[in-house]
Image (cartoon, rainbow, N blue to C red):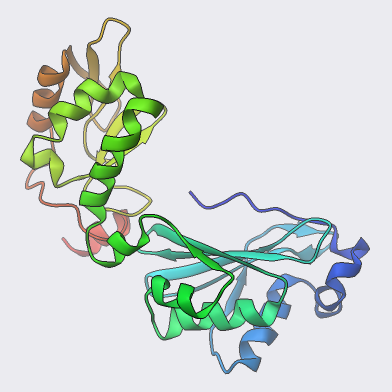
Amino acid sequence: MEPNFLSTDLTESACYLDLIEDGGLSPSLQKALLRVGSSLQVKGLGAVLEGLPVCARVERKNRFSQVYVHESQRMFSFDFWESGTMLGRGRTELLSDVARAISDWLEMPAFLTELEGKYSFINVEEKTRSFENGREVDWTWDNYQTRLPKQFPTLSAFFDEAKQTPVLRRLFPFTSHNRFCFSRCTGYPYSADCPYIGPLDDGRYEVFDHTQRRIGVGIAKEAVTLVVENLPANCGPAIRGTRDDLKTNK
């Protein structure tokens, strides 16, 4: 779920003479962080053009930001991830702005909604405030209530049954390739150990376990029952974090 990076040939761009001189985005960003008094370390992300890195990542504990350069104009775009969830993006021409915002995000640490008020070039996602308040599961269910009938109408009948089922309502819901899925964690990568469903043309649903083995077929209510019966043992509420956090919490 990391974004697709835009890139440019830095060696032919007058917009990035400083990056060319420093040897690419990563070393330039490292210098900018040092100037704002940050001890954060920059990692290259492997995208290289003409021998120069054009993408970078900075991380600390359960947070990270990715930075990349735009084509044909001087512009840096970057994002803000926490516990496997992307909460917002930034966009600015100044690498010093990028460094200050990332330093605040990773070292303070502040809520992203607070940083949005401090930096005009930061935009938070619609979900961010709810995620910061620990309501990411409820927000996601409520969001699907609004958009599922338009985006995935064939899943609506199953969703209507699932949302009234307490053991499922406390899991984190997500869709993938017209399938409705559940996770025991709220961040990506998801837990990948819960059953999921896919719609059939006759209004019924196929139910699969986490190994992609078909468990059965039925109308919405029957499909919900099959999902519940095949959940992992001791399947509690979804935790904040990723699949790796589930492993450490055992």
